[in-house]
Amino acid sequence: MLEFRNISFHFPTKRNTIDVLHDVSFTCGEDEIVAVVGPSGCGKSTLLSLATGLRKPTAGDILIDGRPVKGQNRLIGMMFQQSTLLPWRSVVENVELGLEIRGEPKSFRRDKAVTLMRQYGLGGFERKYPHALSGGMQKRAALAQTLAMEPEVLLLDEPFAALDAQTRVVIENDVVKICRAGKRSVLLVTHDISEAISMADRVVVLSRRPGTVKEIFDIPFSRGAKSVADVPAMPEYATYFKRIWDALDISVTGMNETAA
Amino acid sequence: MTISWHNLIVTLGRLLVLAVLLLGTELGVRYGILSKLFFSSPTEIYHALQAQYGEGTLMPNIGITVFETMLGLIAGSLAGIATGLVLPQSRTLSRVIEPFLMVLNGIPVIVIAPLFILWLGLGLASKIGISVYIVFFAMFIPVYTASLRLERTLVDALWVMGANRWQIFWKVVVPSSLPSIYTGLKIGSGLALIGAVIGEFVASRSGLGHMILYASGTLDTPTLYLGIIALAIFAAALSFAVDALGHVLVHWRFADEK
Ligand SMILES: Nc1ncnc2c1ncn2[C@@H]1O[C@H](COP(=O)(O)OP(=O)(O)O)[C@@H](O)[C@H]1O
Ligand SMILES: [Mg+2]
Image (cartoon, rainbow over all chains, first blue to last red; front, side):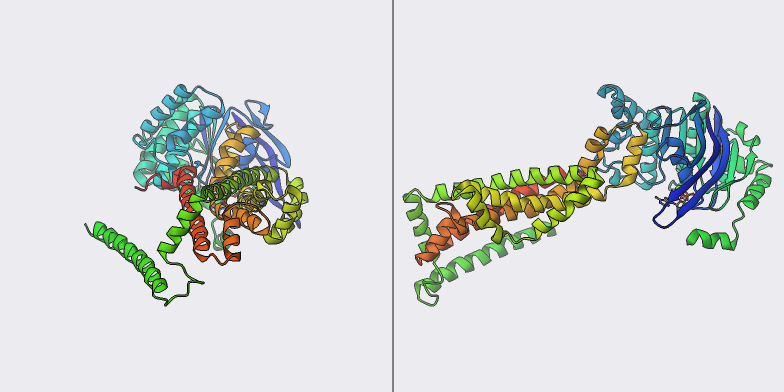
């Protein structure tokens, strides 16, 4: 379980400070997927980096299973928005990197990495280097790397944007299944409202910078769906889409702010 | 099919250029079209080779210059890599040291050479010292610059996976610097030889630089050419070896070619 309690964060710059997040509170429970949507630059990635302990909030507390986050935390796993595969390591060496850092024995981590890679359609690419993989395959390798460490809290920063439609549905379903099976907490940052509704139990809408929680939507109806691909056809979908869209308030001025 | 034809033509072309050069100088010098003071025919150079070899001076001279160059390259590179990687670990330390290194780097090696002769004497040590000095900067500058521009997200990703400082250093910082180490080796290998020969030019009793300078002083043009050719062959072999080493260092960039 991951809790944000009255989180504020300022970036110190040379001249002044940038207010990035202001008084953000929400929780992501066990066996729960929470999606965070908001205009770009509103502090979504920053929020995740606070949860990992990479940055410290200016005010407020972040708790994992009731204990405050300070420094590194074994319970948390994160997939970054940019590719973080190491170019000088083969794909399988990248997938097993987290286990290697933990000091797991070589045969154990290699077996686990190879199994995960097969599961994610990367079988046969073990000895390739990341640059030889398509964008979608790189994302899957990064996901396999994160899941190999079996984190209790999984942070995903716009993970599926680069995937083609079919692969995307497969992996979205996998993430939902992994969350449910392991009673994990998944925090998913996305700019895709449809993805948020299809995958998440709750959707947190952030405002433009400084990011504040505008509204939180419970999405009870999508939980029973066999596949995330079935959700948009459900009768409740359109209503939720409209409400979240309105909350996001992507007006013309909002677009300008984004481009700036 | 077309590829092999292309290769054949290139090889034949190269042989033709070589043949024209050899035959041109041979005939030119023999028939007095080219002055013997400025040019030597391949036969004359070959005779110089026999003479130098017979006196037992050629091989030691080559050996000494090769030794100075290799030692300068290896020691200078190691020092450059170590400093380039470790200095950026402390922002304060690197800001203190940086201006001193930049000023030292700006001094032309030719004016530093007499100082090394003064410190380390007429023997090999001073030549190796000069070589180490210029190779150090050729290696330090690219490695240092690359370490300062290290991809922050990669470090963050490893940190989140639980890596300590040491693991981040060996798994991210060091491999990130391999392409710049390769760059440093490429530039440094040429400079290592220049350093050794400059040292030999300034003051020495042996080495290819000494042989060339002596031949020039005694107007022994064939031996002068012999020295230059020996240096050229060594430089080419060294550059070939460095390229081969580079393919190992940055193996991932070449993994999918072939
Ligand atoms: N290293 C940094 N230094 C200063 N400001 C930053 C830095 N990184 C991000 N910001 C600012 O913080 C804001 C939030 O960034 P980010 O969390 O990446 O947004 P999002 O992921 O929602 O697009 C941005 O508007 C950006 O200007
Ligand atoms: Mg972001």
